[in-house]
Length: 238
Image 1 (cartoon, rainbow, N blue to C red):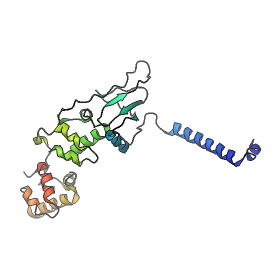
Image 2 (spheres, one colour):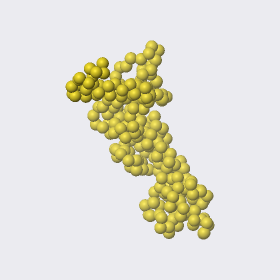
Image 3 (cartoon, one colour):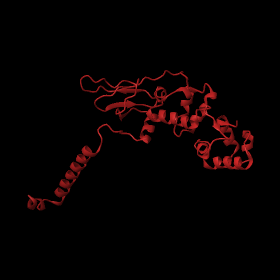
Image 4 (cartoon, rainbow, N blue to C red):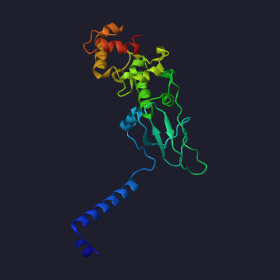
């Protein structure tokens, strides 16, 4: 056999080597890749949220979400478009297993409280899918709550039109930063603060005592007028 191999033409040997390589790659993928793993990276998911055309994509069903879909025996092929609407192909599942259920979307004109919505409710907004619902929710948690819908513009790639679906019903629910008590790490954790601003506050407290109002922050070179305006809803000087 090996002797016959050497009598093959150069082109035939290349074709045979290519086929063997494809077979090895296919075998490795079957062994190494998880059956129900996530198929799309975050950047691809973000693109799907904003595409204007239908596209085929694989939805991860390894973690069922209450009220949104039920887990099936196999991954599901779906179609997604930019306004957030989705439709699903018929799939064959094991007897007794429920089908993947369609994600319902709110009708146009609906307005919801930005601080009261979880990821499942956010995904009911046309134009918001799994990726952006997570980004919106997590950014709100980091801020301590949204003080205005304009803050959605700070989430990279999120369409401006999405703001029309939201309002901020009550800014009193925004989590405050205790300026005169918070530690350096607590201060710097806020998205509008950072290390240098937090350090300036801590050092001032050590030298001069309590900070009484936002106007005092304007004396710090680390704080611009825009910084103070953005931070004002989150600061407490008691």
